[in-house]
Amino acid sequence: MSEGVEVIINAAAGGGSGDDERARAVETAFSACGVGARVSVARGGGDVEEFVRRALSNGARAVVAGGGDGTIGAVAG
Image 1 (cartoon, helix red, strand yellow):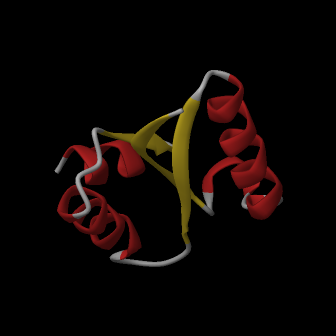
Image 2 (cartoon, rainbow, N blue to C red):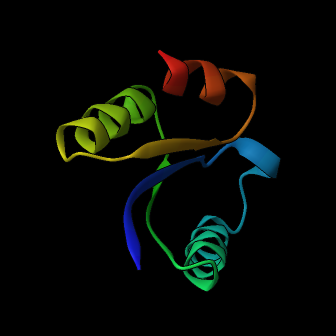
Protein backbone atom coordinates (compact mmCIF):
# COMPACT_ATOMS: atom_id res chain seq x y z
CA MET A 1 0.00 0.00 0.00
CA SER A 2 1.28 3.43 -0.92
CA GLU A 3 1.79 5.81 2.01
CA GLY A 4 2.11 9.53 2.53
CA VAL A 5 -1.28 11.19 2.09
CA GLU A 6 -2.57 13.57 4.77
CA VAL A 7 -6.26 14.43 4.62
CA ILE A 8 -7.39 17.41 6.69
CA ILE A 9 -11.11 17.67 7.36
CA ASN A 10 -12.66 20.85 8.76
CA ALA A 11 -14.99 19.86 11.60
CA ALA A 12 -17.27 22.83 10.85
CA ALA A 13 -17.78 21.84 7.20
CA GLY A 14 -21.04 20.18 6.29
CA GLY A 15 -22.81 21.22 9.45
CA GLY A 16 -20.09 19.92 11.75
CA SER A 17 -21.57 16.54 12.58
CA GLY A 18 -20.19 13.04 12.20
CA ASP A 19 -16.52 14.03 12.13
CA ASP A 20 -15.23 10.64 13.28
CA GLU A 21 -17.56 8.87 10.89
CA ARG A 22 -16.35 11.05 7.99
CA ALA A 23 -12.72 10.43 8.94
CA ARG A 24 -13.24 6.65 8.94
CA ALA A 25 -15.07 6.82 5.60
CA VAL A 26 -12.18 8.78 4.04
CA GLU A 27 -9.57 6.35 5.40
CA THR A 28 -11.62 3.42 4.08
CA ALA A 29 -11.96 4.99 0.63
CA PHE A 30 -8.22 5.64 0.32
CA SER A 31 -7.42 2.16 1.62
CA ALA A 32 -9.76 0.59 -0.95
CA CYS A 33 -7.62 2.29 -3.62
CA GLY A 34 -4.41 0.97 -2.08
CA VAL A 35 -3.38 4.32 -0.62
CA GLY A 36 -2.54 4.82 3.05
CA ALA A 37 -3.93 8.06 4.40
CA ARG A 38 -3.78 9.79 7.73
CA VAL A 39 -6.96 11.79 8.42
CA SER A 40 -6.91 14.72 10.84
CA VAL A 41 -9.97 16.68 11.91
CA ALA A 42 -9.41 20.42 12.40
CA ARG A 43 -11.57 21.64 15.26
CA GLY A 44 -10.21 25.12 15.90
CA GLY A 45 -8.12 28.04 14.75
CA GLY A 46 -4.63 27.08 13.72
CA ASP A 47 -5.31 23.35 13.50
CA VAL A 48 -5.18 23.23 9.70
CA GLU A 49 -1.85 25.03 9.50
CA GLU A 50 -0.38 22.80 12.23
CA PHE A 51 -1.57 19.65 10.47
CA VAL A 52 -0.03 20.84 7.19
CA ARG A 53 3.30 21.59 8.89
CA ARG A 54 3.30 18.18 10.57
CA ALA A 55 2.42 16.39 7.33
CA LEU A 56 5.18 18.11 5.37
CA SER A 57 7.78 17.54 8.08
CA ASN A 58 6.80 13.85 8.10
CA GLY A 59 7.30 13.60 4.33
CA ALA A 60 3.68 13.54 3.14
CA ARG A 61 3.50 13.11 -0.62
CA ALA A 62 0.14 14.91 -0.79
CA VAL A 63 -2.10 16.98 1.48
CA VAL A 64 -5.83 16.90 0.76
CA ALA A 65 -8.29 19.49 2.10
CA GLY A 66 -11.80 18.46 3.09
CA GLY A 67 -13.91 21.53 3.73
CA GLY A 68 -14.78 24.81 2.13
CA ASP A 69 -12.83 27.70 0.66
CA GLY A 70 -11.20 28.57 3.98
CA THR A 71 -9.88 25.05 4.53
CA ILE A 72 -8.60 24.82 0.97
CA GLY A 73 -6.90 28.21 1.28
CA ALA A 74 -5.28 27.28 4.60
CA VAL A 75 -3.94 24.00 3.18
CA ALA A 76 -2.66 25.74 0.05
CA GLY A 77 -0.89 28.25 2.28
